[in-house]
Length: 338
Image: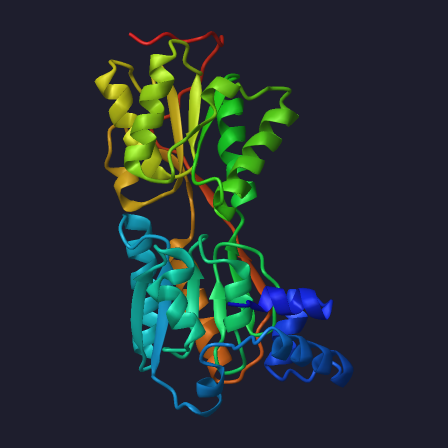
């Protein structure tokens, strides 16, 4: 089946331009629109749900599409969006994007089963979002920078967050610092890693390839990556985990290996989930404005549904939260597991 990307390629236009043309956007010239429509006909391209979208009534429901519905970060985000939806007299459907292009979440987007959507799911491709967004179906994207009509970005400054976390460790005297990453295709992970690298480069420090491990943003992944690090023998002075879930898994792995945090190794996370304050030791982390981001995304979606103009992109700031999992060091040396 042909996709909008195929149509754009055949017509010789950008993906967003093809989407505008097929949505009847007045910004696209008549000549370009005719070229895109001709390409769509040649490829027998049909936009699922498009005709229905032109005549359907509102469902008074919005969707929140997430990579995973489990975990404290997603739970808090769901609550914040639900509060806004209920205040506007709408229902909220939260669903997982597991299954990619064949998932229920993608069908919600293509067939317009709801009135609009908020996306935090890195495995839903850009072309699906650009194709689905329309005047009667606004989309808020929270996990990537994507420019298209009727599509708005609500982002957190992850690069600065990664920089602050790493810089904090460096200022405490740490010189060998590992980064445990999330999924390789995650926009959030890429930003945090860029911030880590920037701080390391500024300090004249290098990342060691043997400590370049992935925990996939889940607690079990952080645990396994940390166990792998311990098995290699030499430990860094500090570890920056790409999120708190992985850091909490790492704390458990260190404890089981007889390695004391922060006496033997310092640990810092990212997100500031509620549990991070109650683990032992309490986790130093970067606070991500989860509730604020969800509330803002919800408010923007309803403004768009009401035909109000909004900015194409919003970026929220982050804060460093100091607790007890990081200590200052005087002389840096390779640590050995006990």
